[in-house]
Length: 124
Image (tube, rainbow, N blue to C red):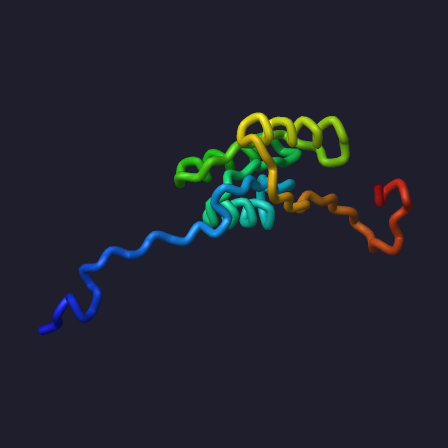
């Protein structure tokens, strides 16, 4: 016979440590893939998360999923190649949370050639 006092079987699991609680994160390109994973991890660590992507539907789906799991998340359609779009995303975050502490520049462009063959215009 096992004593629950020695096994801890009846003890409640400790709450996860939210190491980034109180910090607001923005992950660009977080509508799928690595960006989505980063947004989920930051939310798990306690961050409210601005989910932004060129694909607004994907961004909203990720943000909704985060909210369904108890996180504070907002989706914003963002084209990181356009200053006005970036500025609007920052304004949305600051309007909602009063600050922006963490930026993950994850958004990228798939270009089917070696980066050494990119022209300056393609690089920009």
